[in-house]
View (cartoon, rainbow, N blue to C red):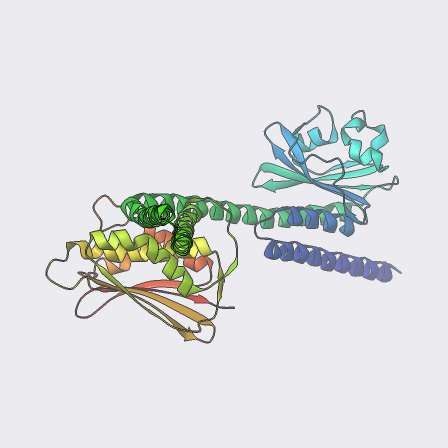
Length: 423
């Protein structure tokens, strides 16, 4: 008899552990499928917590200062959002179950919520008829960052085994959630740095931008002046007027395109995934670097392969990398006096699932001491340089699943290349 009971308990415990592993797997899957949005992760944690302990209601709260905010509510079988303000911070009422959780850092079990003096604190639970409550802390070391709450609509206390089960689940969910939040913050910081680098780079390109905008403006003025002259003839030469106005419209569109590209590079927007034509991206960036190349007496040539597959990525970020590499090559040639000043931009298909872009210059090249440190943050060979451009470029390419590297060329010069997968 005792052996039979022991066997049943072992089987039950094994079943609970399997369910717990499945619950954590669901949380990890939500993290993988939602790298930039925490809400699906919050909802998955609550859904699996309620399922593990056969509860009908669930919540996830995050503590902030002396209060807390609710980030997920669940009224089986779906998340519940009606009338719910996620941004509101609620105070922790003295003597309430939540206050006991804050003080003890341990699970708080309430057999009958209706008997609690602070029952009004749980207005959402009251509206769904919750009676038995379990609050489990989410701890990072000894810091209380949140709590998982599960409730039953009948007075049915949770067993010690269920409390242990949900406590273990909460600990594992906390580790996964904190890892996601750190990764998200890291991406946000990278985005901030990348945006700052773009702004600084566009500042360096003021002369080039002025040239690229002034050129169509001057052509536009000439065409409009011609249109006025043709209209003043007797009789007016309407065919010439129409042709001059059409040319003016074309120049307006050209100026608008240049300004639009500058604006896109300057704006701070969330990372997005587009289908990017590498050759088109190169040509658009070259329009912005024309003035800088002219100022340094540099000839920029291209050898762009036809029929390249599209790559998936953030167009603005990839153009930032191309822009940095071209500018670095042009500026490296500024000190060259006797030799040819030339930059060659190439695109090719490294293998069926990979596109490669290269920027090669005929400058002084890379020393043995410089080459290993090129992509280190704050390392620079430019007077007054910040040393962040290449480090940011590498982080962008690696975030796209690619690789960026540099090599010296014979008899002189440097070659920077990156590859991006087309899948």
